[in-house]
Image 1 (spheres, rainbow, N blue to C red):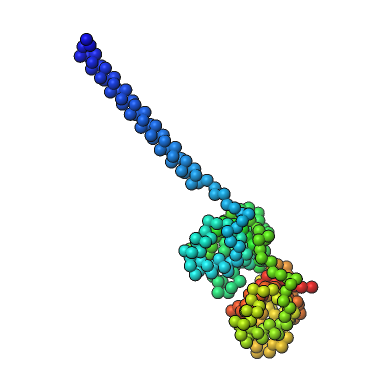
Image 2: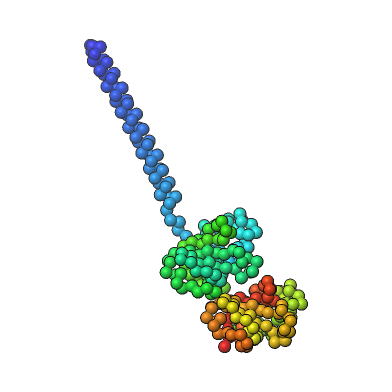
Length: 267
């Protein structure tokens, strides 16, 4: 029979083996937990595969800013972390981003800040040009602007005005309709491409102003603001010159009877 010393030795060994097994199990459990944590971190930080071939929305700066202004929560759900194609007019060009501004003067405080995937693309922009950018939409920042990241120039997604099929109007009639009844004039012209010939009365850095031939010297509210699709067209106009303009009617705009956006000078 085993003496007491041998029995105690056997018990001690059994306890040691049991502790080793427990330690081994703990190490295994710890290893599994650590592996799960690492997997979660990797998955969470893995770049999301955004579908740039099919943007979730094709909108203008005006639409995006109006949506966020009216209902930020709904707009965030609609646009945030999704690829959008947004069209607007280049306002400023910074070292790291470009601002696109709305055509609506009521939204002059707000911009869409465009951060390009390739900073070399910043050289392709000109202030005043109308461009379409495709990128991943963020929420509004502290100033109420909307940031769009990972952007590429995507003019193929722009809704191009029908310059060839423009509705030909007489500038005198066009202005008269807006002065008499803005609502009815909008029904007839707003959002549509129009063409008219008029005299240029003012040329600013980013737009031109024309007026009807029958304008009275005291008739201050008959001017039409022209915002060009390409700022090179602005160089084609000068004060006193009569030109033919084709562009999309935006409706009434602040101090102007009407505004024509994405305009071109027709030869």
